[in-house]
Length: 272
Image (cartoon, rainbow, N blue to C red; front, top):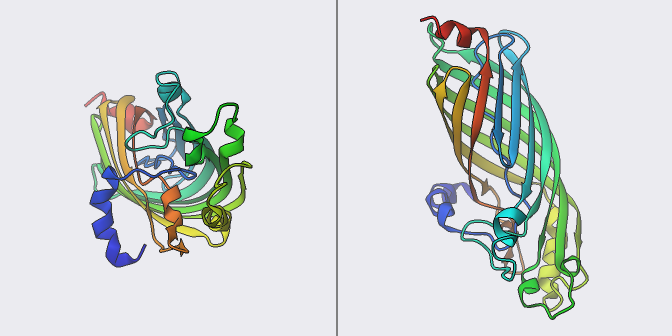
């Protein structure tokens, strides 16, 4: 998407749902570490994250994601294959990634923190082509399955406030995703050869994403409630024969979970 469209796209993304998602952005890991040997982890239903400070300014992180919406959709409405308002209910998959970064407290009380991480991940997603919802009896999901794998490179600076009770961060993540090994079922796009060709061309070029995230944690000392709102904006205009390949990317996500924090400053904060 061209830069002049970014500001217009951001407020609209929360109301737009992709037809078929073969890329669901994982939760941004914004640890806001302050000191050597500090460890922080975030746990949610589809994302698991950890970060560890190996020195006073250098840290490593590991992030995992697994998306499976069968429990939330199929068990409650097994006869319907229509999408939810915001997500493609047939999407399955995830990724594993790691990164290394620099962090620094910006004030003497170590409440304002800046960090920046860079890393690499690899993952895969699969979903069902839209025609499956009207497929004749006896048709299997594999006949309409769409699947792709991808490499992902990311850079993410964060600016935040970290207190024993409340933490907040803004993280404008930039990701480059390179799709490969696209496969499809024998009946996928059976009556639309143009879309079939477009899906196979998805891996022709790497796709850059701007993925700003807003993170809040509320609790006390070691355990906090964690919430994050993130947008995922493709920064290209890849259109083949009038069909926008960006329609395959989930544009917005909201995650909640639990954050765990273990460090000397956390222990000392309980004595103040």
